[in-house]
Length: 520
Image (cartoon, rainbow, N blue to C red; front, side, top):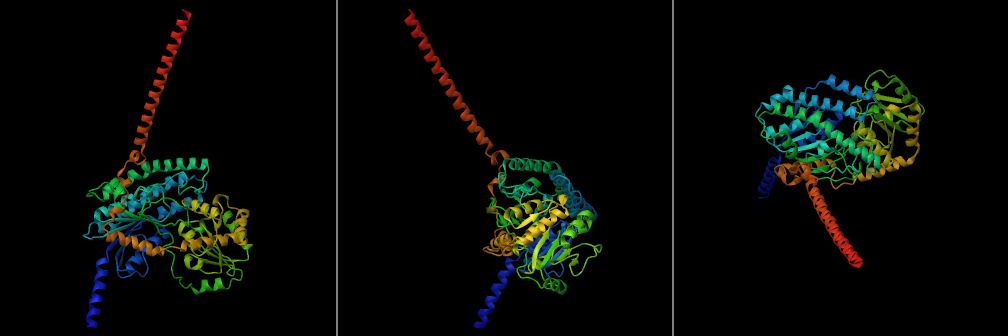
């Protein structure tokens, strides 16, 4: 009898699991390894939970689970690398110039994604998917995969939230205290900063409507000629949930609709992996601690201006700490007792080591999140995009100091290094924020997986979608209501003026008649 009960229970458990599993397509087209780390982390976890995963990206997961499949996106690597080199070198360019160049790159990436041979093969197949998980990075044409496969969409934003993400679910963005992600403002803006924030957002929306939207619309129509819904309809009604790689403890409190979910830190290893022996020995043999130095997955430090590179080296040579430095080629020959160089380093696990005292970073969101999670203060050298904003946040919260790449000198870098290393407040502040980040009802990865399964369980979770998505600009902002109120107030005011004038004329007439009667 006991054996029969156990068998029934096992059948129920395994039957329930198979009923709950789904076929999920993950599309992460950006040829930036940091973006792919986020996407692949979530997709791998979902695969381990039993879902059938198809990953579409320029990168391939090493040792994937058996139910994890890869579709190669063939990108124009030279085109992308040339753009990154220009961003790194042309530090004097304005944010607007950099954004315009980035729009061209995004359109190119969307085009190459949709025309990659393996992607075309998938579109011409009879494959079916229950859910699309899409990296939202200007690439709205890729929402067509959801239309093609007739499935709901979960968006994942690998950086902060801006208007071209908000419009997908109707999230408000009050410009009085929510700065644009490409500006180095905080949530405490002066009048002129608020003025600049409004103008920058309007300009960004305008540039998007001119440079991004028409191209994405054309790509959508060409790649998905049988689509029943337009791209504009897809942008307003297709996305069920957006997973935001942020958390209020990392940034600023701001409003979200219910289907905008913060999962900041979800990619951080919940269990620290053992370090390679050469790195572990280097860290543990460093008497005064270690500085970890990485400018991210895209920037090549070998492209640094020689003068700035020498300024950095001169500053580091004065410190007692040893340095682990992510460097991309063999051109730098340094004292191996002082420096450990590597083209790719296990950053998350290095930062977890207690003997690491400082992180020199470009200020990317993943790096900042890992730094906070492990309680390490930073010196930031922001280059582009949200890096400026992230470092502004670090300085405001007191866990880091930023040094502009354009103004980087030995003197400015010396100051930043010594300020953070010798002032204990930076370490105390980041450890306090780390406690806030870790204090969540669910681990961030479990939160992300919960919402993926929630959308699957509830057939796209239509009930989460805001009614704001059915309103146009005038209706959403109640401009028609305010015009009516203003017209009503104007009418009442006009009537009052006329009544007052009429009464005044009556009294004036009576006064004149009294004067005439007295004179007569």
